[in-house]
Image (cartoon, rainbow, N blue to C red; front, side, top):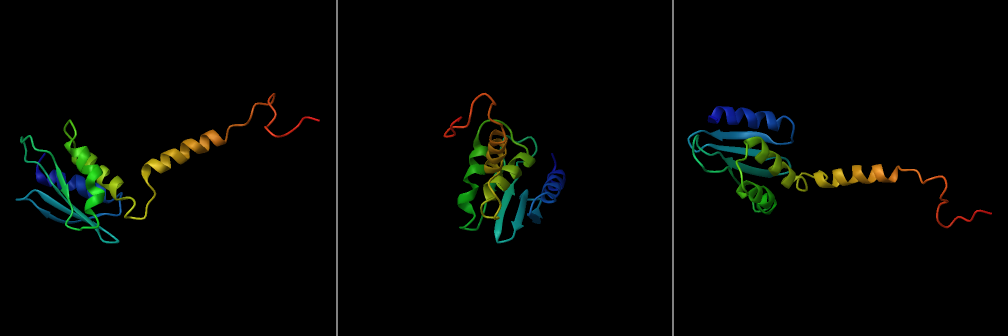
Amino acid sequence: MDFQQLADVAEKWCSNTPFELIATEETERRMDFYADPGVSFYVLCPDNGCGDNFHVWSESEDCLPFLQLAQDYISSCGKKTLQEVLEKVFKSFRPLLGLPDADDDAFEEYSADVEEEEPEADHPPMGVSQQ
């Protein structure tokens, strides 16, 4: 995929997140992203036909530790798309952005389903006598 196509994917991704694509550098194949409150990172995109993976990094000491999840994901087996990499970065930065963790949301939905179940009619609730 050429760099302009990757930049288009990044712009589309930004439209659904708090991030903005603030700079692109085609010769370095680099894209810089920023979101308030001071969350920034960049992605280095692999060359066409090259076996390299994407690379994510931040020059902010506050942001860098949160990128570990995305960096581990990129270095794991298999080719990744820019969309997949950006989604993993967004998930990594959710705490810094003041958003609930995506996994917490899924757990709450699952818990809500369980809690809504009605007890069976032939079993009285615990602690209630049938007198």
